Length: 428
Ligand code: 9WN
Image (cartoon, rainbow, N blue to C red):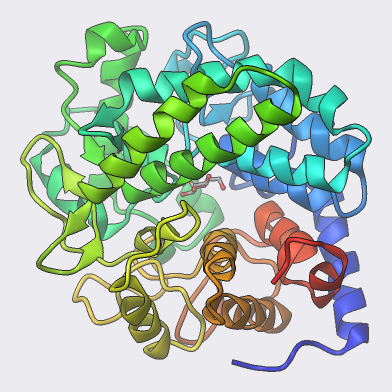
């Protein structure tokens, strides 16, 4: 762990981060990066909003408003909103067949948006009520959609690896192996035209991703029909911890607006109990469980460490965090470096993701652990040395995936930059 950057370095990186966000702004929504991801992604937008808040508060709110405008009739807020068709990304709107008001995918993504909205309000006390009030009911309906369609023993499940945002983590290797892919014929991936294939999921993963999309599309994404027969259903700490925190933050937003928050409050103990069903007693960690086979994944991932963000402090987790971080130069690796499945450059099978670091660190701060401040410094150094990459090799820090990435720039502006820590009351 290292000292903070010099003021000139901070100024230069603050400017660079703002420039990236402005370049990735498509007018009302941000793309995660030019080329590789040409649409609006759900949790990327939530993080983008807090990045904008560092220099353009109005634009920050607009990011969330545009996302919520894509909400489906059943309450779901989609994982990708296809505002303008771009052949550079596959699978596009025709393959997904989303049935919302704007072309979109048929699954959701980790609902960090309410937590980021609370952060916007704290940053913008004068306009917070006015900007959030029109969105409040939509947020409640979205959170209710998770409670209606994604719970298993109180833990939140994903129905597609893309729903968790951690596409190819070893956490679902078992569930993916049990999923029989369809014969999809020839299809052309676009991601490997932008990024080296060694940093991306395998074709066998894509065959399964697309199989799930085809099943959903055929059923017009009608949750009632899909629920019983869906062939991939995995209880996930990412979703469980992030939704639990988001319920707490949405309840706070509702209280500020003078709204009845009893329904939201009633969801909190359900997820608290659900989170404990993700405790793997042998490995002594929060883990993923395949609800179809009942099997544990037996993985320590960066999502395991979101417990503090959710308000849960479990004694065994801190030694795990310190152990995995000791094994790398830049924490938190997305998969345990001591596991044979660890791959330093392959996407969610090892690399470090700055936005998960922020959630982990802030949770640690809230429980008074110095590890949060150390993680912030370590993340800042990783970005100073390696730029605003999509993700990073935890051993060398080498930038990986897409470059000039919106959420890395946003996390820098809101949290990792030494300037942010001085300006923002929430920074550790
Ligand atoms: C599929 C946009 C998204 C992130 C995800 C990340 C990656 C997409 C892909 O990019 O997923 O959703 O095509 O690989 O895994 O977390 O939201 O940045």
